[in-house]
Image (cartoon, rainbow, N blue to C red; front, side):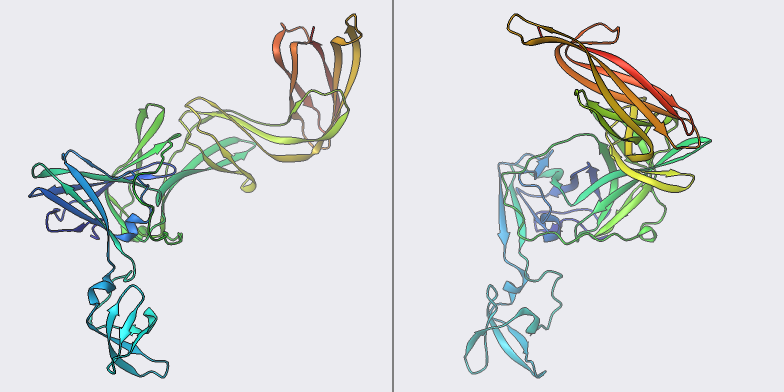
Length: 428
């Protein structure tokens, strides 16, 4: 098992220890058990880990300390200063030289001449690490007494997101979801306990320096064979507005990878397709096409994520859904439906003016005319927002500042239909 923390003289970890991670949509909390046998706990994080750490998030839980010192250590090449390395020339010849200064790769040849070289020209008697030019970060905790605790930090290198597929047909609709766990770092994780959290969590950096090196680009690849039987995602309940999920067993999250697991299969009710328009009141004439809408409720909480919609097995669009409570309504549009056109006209029925001739109250008749070229009937829904000090819509009670006019019309196959509503805007 590749260990997350490099051991120092005052830090001992049992070989069976594994990392615990709590993955949020935009960051992850990494938790590692640590033990000190003396009054100093020294922890060296590999650069692969440090490159994604959120500033100010390092913490030591369960083990009191008097002070902590974070220090940027020299890179591996610095340890070879004053020693012999080998310089390969363009003609293929190799000569021994002395590494004088690792910072700018200054060397000295046998004749005593100093000059700088490129790292790619050097050869060594020992195996260099993966990042020989990268420094490391060391944390030294001064402890009042020996003991055990948990070292934790936040990283943006590991995140997760659900993605949904909505399959619809004349027989109804079904939804399924997968969870993508992304590791965008060069560091693999052997994970003992994993928790996934859905919801809105904001974190802020500060306190510690920014990473020295940028994280490596993320590559998507399948690594299922590396960690054996796939864990299952289980619901863990609600936590102060967040929703928790747990993985049923330990697993490996390889470097630069995406691990995908089956997530939810919610049961859908009140599934509807319709065409619609959401607009604001104005007195002008307008025309266009309506949008394709989908609406349903689910018997499970749905974390925010992208959704792909398939009709009879064919993709008809993609969009995103927000965090939705259990039993909450999900509604989204997938763009224009050119088969259903509308024309909206407004007639001014009456106006009331004050003593100065200013209009203080107006009555309008708004008419929507629909025309469909579809071979089957379709439901159209219009939502029009009307602003004013006091707004009356048809025979409903007046509302202050803003009213909503809702039309629901069944348009016959290859047919036409129109419907009107009355608006009174009272600004007196």
